[in-house]
Structures are given as structure tokens and as C-alpha cells.
Length: 429
Length: 85
Image (cartoon, rainbow over all chains, first blue to last red; front, side, top):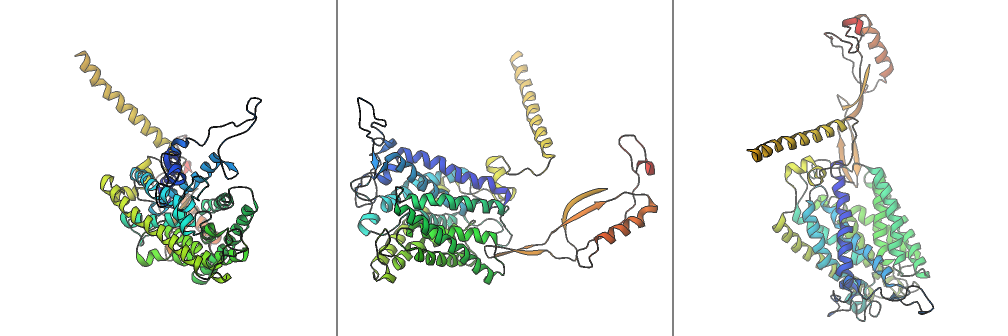
């Protein structure tokens, strides 16, 4: 969805999130999120499972001398499987932010921001939302246990969290040069469509996987993930048909993402009909919300705010309306006779994470800006961030470009050899 | 004859594309540029065949222009002028 001159940097920001957050997760991230609470449900003990210690020792295979298979479990699954599953949430949340600053953020400052943000924002928020008392630790986080707001698979912890951070980072880093006057159209929509398909498939892992077992709850979450996503895609296309005249492929892909985001928190608590409603509402609202950046003048390159923040809020808050007591979460929303009890819990959870993430992200962005600066120069931005930050280009469309590559190589070799001559001469002299 | 893919426009205007509700006007239209080097007595015949094949009667059909060529050398043999064509 970025321009061709920025495609590698966009992919690198996501891929580097995997590398960086993966390392932090093993070291102390999992422990900060799922270790025993250190006070008031705000943070897990970072040292309890440091380096995943205490999560792997035991007998993995039964033998004559040790007939019992014993290794740590979370629920019914091996603890390390849970660690790996939750690692993907930490990684995707950090990677999501990068879409907002595509085309202009230097790579080093991105890594610094990503590492700090994961540590100070994501790991604590994951503890608040995902750490239930008595599952991975005796005492968990406040949103999950004290407030009892529902976020089944990360609408609050992942999407509101990343969307709010994206908004803060975009406000600090500023617009791309020429935006919104110059067209910055996506350079390869077939890749976008392919990505939407991969994303939808992978998302079943997030949503159904959050049942933490191959159970009826997983099946329920999977069906809701189908229902809401399909409805959201159609809803987005209808909005485009009415507003712009044509239904677009980017709109269909965006509708898929909007539906997936909105059903993420709610897939355990709404009925399949409720999921259709969640999808339609998310599709319509997100299709309208991507226009907000033009109205308010913030350059969110890939609509992280319009799709993930808005979609996450829609899904999280709609639980308060559509929660069906017959669903696995067994909570009644406003439309099912439950009154506003669940609605205010959802609202407090959503806005607590939104405000925490936004404020901390603003502070982190200013700190990184003060230390390293955030963006490339105007000239470098015009040249293209792939070339400037990574010394690469994504595509080679010309059959002649190999010649210039050889010439460049020969040039540097030639330079090196001339450099050696005076050095040798100096020694002999 | 040499054929190249180029972009450009004359009286024909481009088109508008829409991405997530944002309009982008695309001015340059993809075109094909054909260069043919021939003897003077064939010029009218070439013009006729190109115009007949390319004409649809709508704006955007394109243009044919004729320029003199000073000389032509066939690289392989060194022949010059009409012999090189």
C-alpha cells in the first residue's frame, strides 16, 4: 500500500518488530505480561519468568524410571505453547504502529521506539487485559480481573493500543512531504489482496486460538470471525459504491481488516447474528473513519488509526450492546437485557488503554526525537527511504540495470586499489 | 521499426482513481510510440497505414509526425544512407 520507493522499509519495520519483540518477549516480555502481579494489577513481575525460566523443566517423554510426563501447563496446553502464541500478539501490536509512519521514519529511531514501546506500553497492557488470576500467575491484571471487561483476542490490548500509539507517533513525526496534495497511491494492489487473504487466514489463529484449546469456544470464535469479516467487507463496499461511485479492491481488503479487528475482542461474547451486526457497523464506520485524516490533517499513511483504533473501539464497545448470554462469555449486553453494566466496563477498559498508550507514546516519541531525530531529510524522502535507509530498491524493472551495478562494483574496487598505492609507497619510504 | 511504451497526453485528459475514498487524478496516460525510418517515397504509405490502424475517431488516438533523418549507418556492415535501411 506504500509507494514503490518505500516498500522494503515498510516490510522491514514489520519484520524487525518480529526480531526485536521476539527477543524481548523471551527475555522479560512474557514475564512482565504474565508473571505474578507486582501491585494493583498494573504489571507482572519481570523476573519471575525471565528467560522463560520455570516454564520448561520437566519430563517430556515417559520412561521406565520417570513414568509421568510432567512439564508446565497453561490450562490444558504446554506453557511454552502459550508463550509462543502470546508472542505473536506482542509482535503484531508493535508492527501495526509502523504503518502510520511509512515513507519517512528512519530505521534506527523506529527500532528504539519499538523496543521502548513494547516494554513500557505493550507488556503492561497485555498484563492488564490478558492475565487472568490463577492461569499463568496467582494474581493477574486489573482489566481482566477487577474491571472484568471482555477482550477475547486483543481488540483493546492490540488494536486500540497500537492505534492510539500510531496517532501519537504521527502527530510527533509530521506529514509526508507533499501530503495530501500529491497523490501517494498504493503501488501494488495485487500484493494488498494477497496480504488480505493471508491476514484473514492467520487471524483465525488469533481469535480461535484465544480459546487456548481446540474446543467449542474456538469453533464459536471462528464462526464469528467469518461472519463479522464477511459482513464488514460488504458494508465497506456499499459505502464506497454510494460515496465514491465504485466498489474498489482496496476497499474490500480494508473491509476485511475492519471486520477482523472489530470481532477480535467480541468473538466469544456475541452470537453469530451479533457478529454480523458488529461487522456491518465496523465496515461502515471504518470506511468513513479513514477520511478523518484529511479533515484533521494528520498523515496516517496506512490508516492504522482509521481501521485499527476505530475498529478496535467499535468491537470493544459493541460487546456492551450485543453480548449474548448464550455465548461462551455468558454476559448480557444492553440489547439482551443486561443493562449498561457491561457497557461501562468495556468503555473504561477501552479508554484506559487508549489514553495510557497515547500519552506514553507521545512521551516516547519526543524522547526518541530528542535523542536521534525521527525522520529522514526532505531530500532523502524524495529519493525514497528504501535507498536511503537500506541501500536497496524493491523492484528491478529494467534489464539494463545490472550494468550499472557492475560499474559501481568496479568503481569501488578501483578506488580501493588506488588507496593502497600510497600506503605501500609510504611503508617503503 | 522501434516500439516503446511511454506515458503522455495531449488534448486527452487522464482519469481519476479512488483509494480509500481519496481521489487521485492521473494525468499521464499510457501510450505506445512507434518509430519507423523509411525512404522518402514510402513516407505517405506509412502515414496511411498508421492512421488507418490507429483511428477510432475519439480524442486520444494520437499523432503522427515526420522528421528528416540525416543519415543512417548499419553497424554490422558500415553501409550508409538508403542501403542501410
